[in-house]
Amino acid sequence: MKITDRVMRNNLMAWFNYATPKQVREGKAWYKEANSFATRLADRSGHDSYVIASVISALSPRNKWERNLIDAEAVTWAHARDLDLDAVKVCTFTKNKIKAFRILNHADVITAKSPKTHSFAMNVGKLSKDHVTVDSWHLRACQCKPSKPVKPKQVQESVTPLQYERVVDITKECAKSVGVKPYEFQAIVWVAIKNKCEG
Image (cartoon, rainbow, N blue to C red; front, side):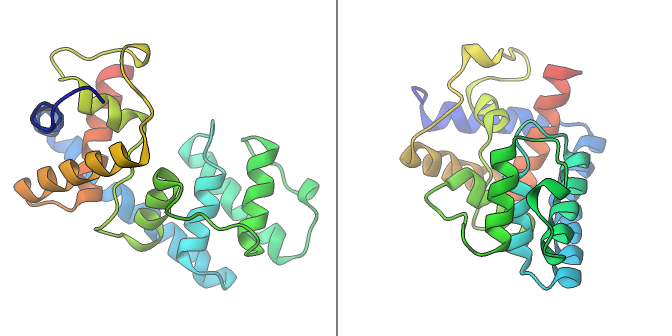
């Protein structure tokens, strides 16, 4: 991204400070609630919570969060019963359902080579403080302030692995400065910018 670290840091802090007390509570709770779901499903199905979080991640494209969880549970139980792929319906693309089954079969693994999905699985599955999920909303927050929000086409919404790490490092610095975990900071910013731009 063609902005300085200082500008990015100031923009992220502006979104964090813009968040209402309710949005701060929602952001702080988001990954903890997601982790509780992943841990419960992992315990009941015999999989690791990271595997379940990876399934959730695989089923997330074009899928609402509530439905994403329903689909993750349906796929996990279909897999446990050795049911065919066609026995379960999901609200995302077929290729993503296939990927979810492959993850449960340990034939496919989300790795650090896919930093966004790996970070998401680490945040949801393990509440990792070392990972930050840098999605398109977070990238947008890096590039604008609440006083001048921008549309998706006006910003860079994908980054190289090196740029991703730069955003992660700056987000961690911001989180440390306000005394919250990096994944909490990201979620608070996510709630604030999504509400501002969609609400």
